[in-house]
Length: 99
Image 1 (cartoon, rainbow, N blue to C red):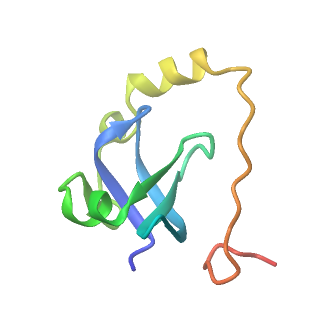
Image 2 (cartoon, one colour):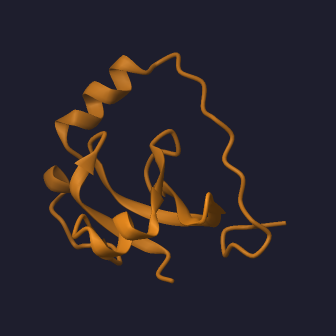
Image 3 (cartoon, rainbow, N blue to C red):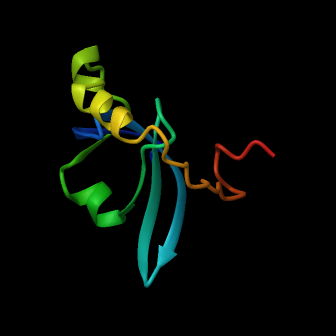
């Protein structure tokens, strides 16, 4: 499975993500994605959403800065200044596991 992904639409103002973990929940394959630039922007999505929805492209797209970091990101950061980051756990077999 490809580890680097570009969202076709900004998510909280950012578009480049890495796949950290794959898990199974209620029979569905779930992927934990985190923004390359801001770990506060992370999401869980299903296999169907990632692979078949047309909302994601494999790899990191070469985008102009204004398309990869939109004004929405500044708005998100100003609204969420005091928000605590949920812990992100990386599976033992993840390429991002440094232990």
